[in-house]
Length: 131
Image (cartoon, rainbow, N blue to C red; front, side, top):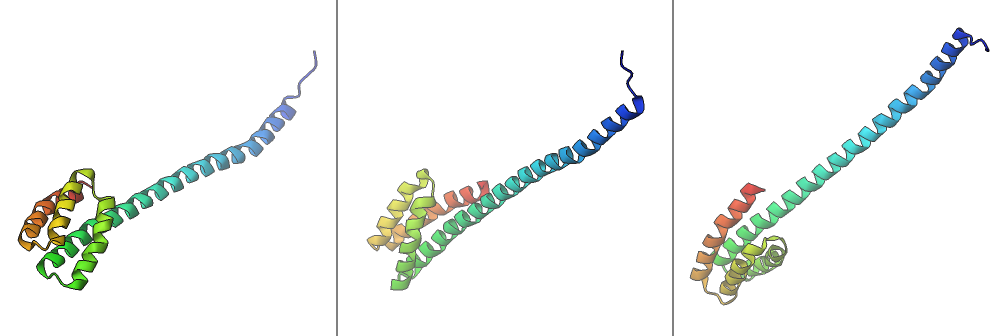
């Protein structure tokens, strides 16, 4: 039976471990860093989306209120711009109320438009609080 020199065997094993260990550590660390970066990116994307959507809700309420209180040409134009965004970003359960309020504004029925805005505002507040 061939003799195995224990010192050489141990030296070879230690050399292989010394080479493999840093490589394995680097691979594990890089994988962790990549997952962490992806989570950070997703979080920033969610925050950005949240603040944009919140801005659309707030701008809609602000512009609609200005349009109803002071129906000048500029206020009506500003309302028209935000109305289109509101149709995109508001949930389905508010679209009917939105369209009804838009009709009231379009037909210049300011009292009923004000009532419609007062009806929509608490719903929007509830949505913003749940976000």
